[in-house]
Length: 438
Ligand code: SAM
Ligand code: SF4
Image 1: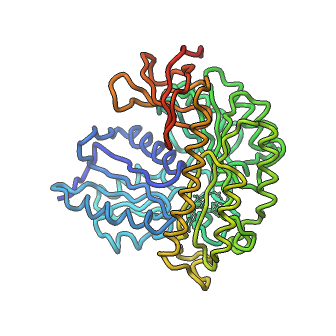
Image 2 (image 1 turned 30 degrees about the vertical axis):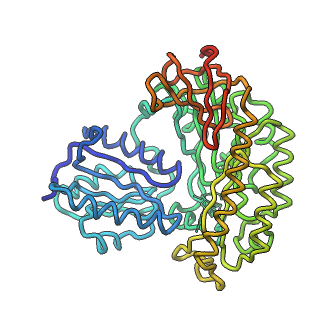
Image 3 (image 1 turned 90 degrees about the vertical axis):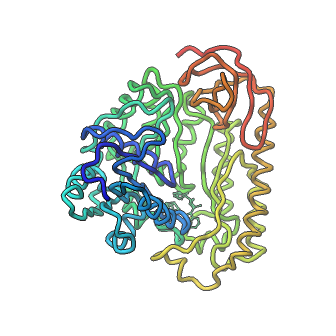
């Protein structure tokens, strides 16, 4: 039996932070329509699966989730949103007939109307890609916790040969300056103390007057009550002097930069259409470190891109050694339908990819652990974000995006001065010294 007229909902987001942002906005939309979020453990009448298409395993998750939902006594209304919805469209209900709604990442402002259509028993599909029109149609921001995401730029024109983003998220567009600053103020009014500006190439953000991301960062810096600014994900080619300078000039801008290189081999980078070289990447990082010596560097890596030789993979290990990352994300290459790399010859065997990924992750893990250990003894501010496992324990973030656990009487959302006492591979423990004034 299907739930015909949903009163409760659950939005389940997979993949990148932009999906987390979209998921929050869909929840706000549904609440504005009078639906309420299902309580923990309660089965929602409407389940929105906000999907990711970046790698095959991520994309397949949606079908196993739909299978699980279909086994409930009362089957919920099922909406598939996100990048799988955009890429597969009407194919989804053909493959999984229990799906009622398919909505792409640029069309989710129409979700309430699609729910009404589905309630009438119609199959509802919207994968139109009108750039930015969703933002004007979304309700006001509400409380999201101390750390909030804010999408400033959508889509991508870079067309790396392995990547589906330009096809699922469309062309690169920047939201207007004023709309972003207004949303940032609304987030701060709703309790946010940290804002992370988001975009597939967030540092490619430009407005009509030619201003770059640093202008937005400076505008956010002036918002009273906002303590921290971050941005992600950046492309090496859009790392401008002005943005790098902001790291030395804007106090609220946190000392953390996620700048994916993907490979340490110039031949592979060219085949990936990355349009930077290992040298140009390393030069950028040198300038960034000169602007902000304590900056934590992070990156993304793909192992096993078609044709990658053992020697080319070892060049990736060399660039990791040269950079010394504080954190990183590494993936096995996954052929994505419709991308040029999926048709390239010399696809790498899965067991070779597994072995390379293990070696790369061992090196990156050791660097992350060493970075954490080097922080022990420092006094620093921690923004408290969520409860820990033990009573009286809260978990927060250091300026370098490390998770810090501490016993404290302070509240979630407080900034506390902490001495870092010990470090593991993924987190640190600290002792509170005092609360930092707002
Ligand atoms: N725009 C960002 C950039 O270019 O650095 C990254 C966006 S993408 C959502 C996040 C990461 O997923 C990429 O940096 C890349 O490492 C990884 N990725 C993208 N396509 C992939 C694929 N086909 N197989 C494996 N990893 C992939
Ligand atoms: Fe994908 Fe490349 Fe665009 Fe990043 S820059 S979203 S990896 S196409």
